[in-house]
Amino acid sequence: MRWHPTDWCEELTTRKKQQAAALELPEVSISDDGDVRYLHLGTPWIQGSMKMAAPFEIELEYVQRMMAWLLFIEPERVSAATPCNWAWARARSPSSA
Image (tube, rainbow, N blue to C red; front, top):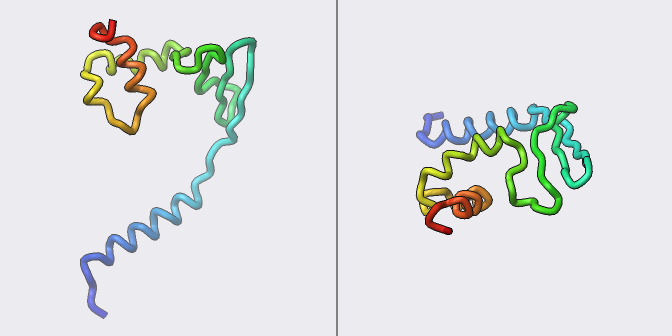
């Protein structure tokens, strides 16, 4: 049997599917404290949070810091795959005031 250039793609796809099936994801849990809802991934440590009254505002300071780069680029450059990030950057952009 002769090797074909597309054989590697099929082999890689099969290998990736096997790896994904073997991957164990942590248990997702949610807790509430007043007006704030927290996300936990397999531990009591907080992985994310949101204010129930303002779900589109970034609640955690470390997440705000991770998203700060959006303040320094034009909103058009933000991927369409991240609409929440784009809205956050646009809302805080000096040009939107």
